[in-house]
View: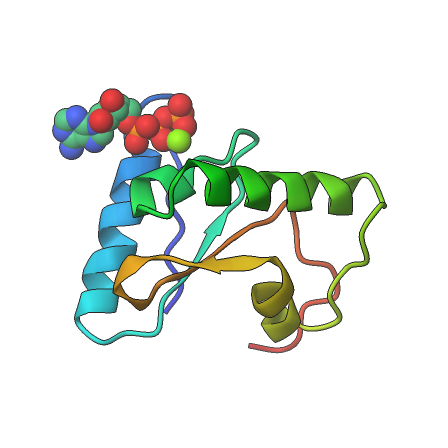
Length: 103
Ligand SMILES: Nc1ncnc2c1ncn2[C@@H]1O[C@H](COP(=O)(O)OP(=O)(O)OP(=O)(O)O)[C@@H](O)[C@H]1O
Ligand SMILES: [Mg+2]
């Protein structure tokens, strides 16, 4: 299942995304949370902390500027550029996925 949260500025997207992700994680679902916001702060709402949230943003900036190598598969994206959040959620901050694998 894929859930996309969109809406106006300040509508509650980040809060809703974090509650959804952690609630599903607590129920045993394997949850991957992707923060595609221009100012990604989902890490703060998920509870990974300031420095880890900042680290993910820095990694994404390096990728966007061509100063880091893109991961060849989605699993590699999560391994290299992700962070563990509470309740088993795996978080990554991304701009886009190029040449996605089927599924
Ligand atoms: N269900 C809710 N009830 C009351 N307040 C809420 C609710 N959801 C979010 N908020 C509050 O509204 C504010 C904006 O929430 P949030 O940051 O999640 O919105 P956002 O859509 O991600 O904003 P942005 O567009 O800036 O990324 C925060 O102060 C948050 O605590
Ligand atoms: Mg937000």
